[in-house]
Image: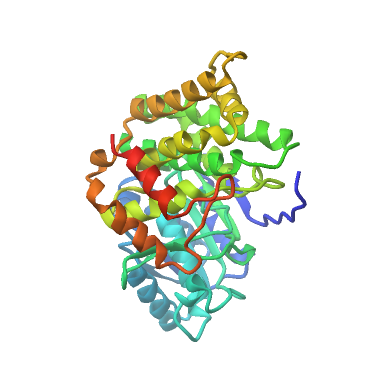
Length: 393
């Protein structure tokens, strides 16, 4: 394993009715005036909004509300939230939703204490040194932002979907995980969330350093859990056991406990950011298109690792004479699983066009240090084009 520093200070309250603790947790972490951030009507239909606001009132916490956060969260809502937090003198942000809501709250928290444009943190012009504390009540098992040190926002000026440099400063103070709040999700959103968490694990699993057996096994266990739980949750939306497994898998997939000591990749995510920037597709849907194509493109770099993935995650039989056959079968089963849970697996499935590939590569090049990217295999403009062409099937 490579040397590492791991700091994960988030408190997790998991289980039925855990949201009743929300107000007390905010008080515990020093909050007295709350900005509640959420998306659309789903949190009200699921009962999450009523339960959380009741807890805030019981704790005697005044709160303002910022609603309307969209998937692939936009900078405009961050600017709106920064202004509202300052106006209301909020000293705590509570994100009620999934990754888009949580990332919006994280960006608001940083921006509210900064005199310049919050986007400076994403361009590298400024470094995040302080933030308003953030707590979360999770309603979608997917992005893992409830325990992570990262956030992704789309800057509407230029349509730039970028992540900020990772920092423990923005990890949530607490996260409340009640699987009941995910039961009302449509099957497509459940599948997108599963794909996202599997991609977070794969970005760590495909690595170059040797002697990472412990975290290899952690990654494989999480992947196998997602593969087993997602079809159950889709078949029976009220299967709380499956929903709980997905919730905790999504968190562990991205708080980096399975990624320490490894050289991480993140190429699939970087390529997908261009798909969702161009076509506003769900992040998980874009990853379902890109990830198997990336696997095909880089497989020869380490056939043994892909063969291990095939055997230990998807139960393939090892062909010792021809390990490349096992590796390819693992990728085939990965793509087949994604199709089985209702995910797209080609550009046309998400309304994307092969004619836009050059434009996506050029758009990526606008990002500071945009190329090369990827820790497993370095991806330059030509490699990105080739991977996107593999998506056009």
